Length: 58
Image 1 (cartoon, one colour):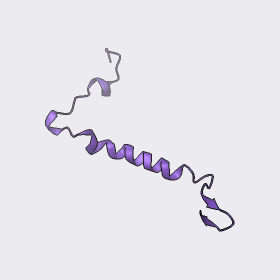
Image 2 (image 1 turned 120 degrees about the vertical axis):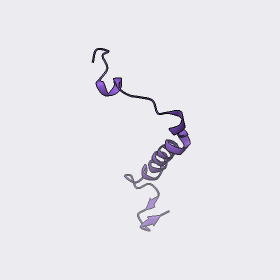
Image 3 (image 1 turned 135 degrees about the horizontal axis):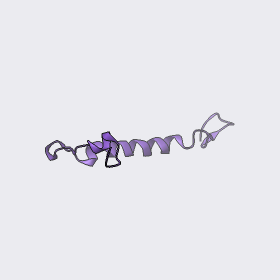
Image 4 (image 1 turned 45 degrees about the horizontal axis):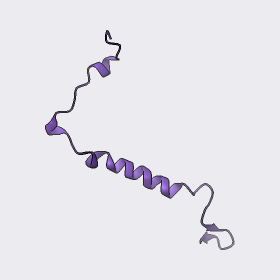
């Protein structure tokens, strides 16, 4: 570790160009999933949109 980097970082190699995939084939699904998860679950703890008198979503 003469360079000041951990061994696993110093030994890292880039992925060859022929084996690389586009960001929208790998990363975009993750970001979309996180955003949709947040939109769906953000109101669950406070019960937004629930009418207690009817016991259902309004």
